[in-house]
Length: 459
Image (cartoon, rainbow, N blue to C red; front, side):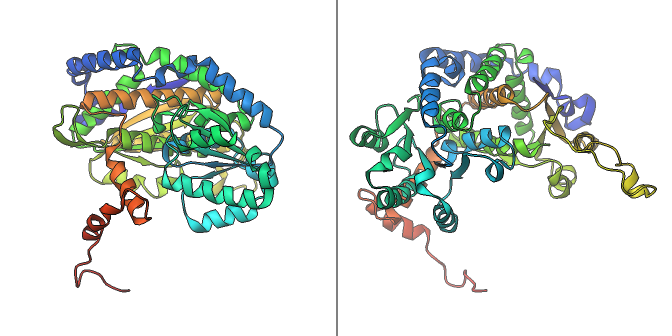
């Protein structure tokens, strides 16, 4: 289903900036230890994303709830932020018709930011009696999700009275948190996120599976693709494990100053997977401290790009700018739909070479041209090619990138499963919004937001 070609990162292809097999072999002490630690953590139950495909009860509960609700709602609003939204949004974008919301039902909306104009527009157009709100938060206390839930709840109580409960599904911690408490107290439907799974690794839990099922997608095939990939990327031999190879190449690139990782799919359908990858790679690997509490300030900045669109906006920088990037091109061999370019301007050289050709030929040529152009400039370039885009392939991609990210964290000797850098911003937000227990942070916030005279200019 998926092929990973890293020839474009090698010294044989791009010259002095490239890596060799010996460079990868030299990492063996690191990779062997990282593999052993990761598999030990998996066996202990501390790292369970590998084994989500075997959680049959989770899938059955998810599909059963979706089956009972399908056909009752014209609109579904998915309320969540970060890992609670990026994964399900990526599944929807990859596997549903790109114009689904204009042509089919149920429409799916992802309320993943607290932009007041977008929120007002969305809530203003919904028919609440035809809408299901899916509220996703492990703790339930995330300010953005809480505000959107409260807004939806207020409107539903006003217009639907006690029937509002039938228009809600919570996806949250199995035992703890305010959403779980409300589910018990009010009798609201709820699905569980396994307690050991962090948000950005939760796409193959009900977080991603329930919205997929509600849209008529096959969740079992998503998990089957993930399982097939899992059986490949748990091998200890780096040269037989594409996820470990992806990690090693990025690690070597980082050590050579390539502190930016670009994921550039040549498919609109895969663009939100690049967005999901951006959070996964950034939040997992951007860490100040190592596992032994040393200051390391490590990480690699992920950037999403879209082929062929960003050949006209970013590739100039990638090819001729600083040597601080590794570019990962993702292509599709068989698109699910195609268009033949008609021969309507016969005899005009600027157009005739395109006539009677499928558009897929053009985007494939664009991808190959970009890879060749980057290699010509000595830029580290990998190529991930997919046979087609379907449930199994998407599930496999999630497992591939999650394993690569976890392994990269162990190679860097940091914890890839926490996000301490996010927490202070959350606490400052609570303080600014007047949440009890956080008001003592106000003085600290004001000192950091102090304006120096002469350093602010009105325009």
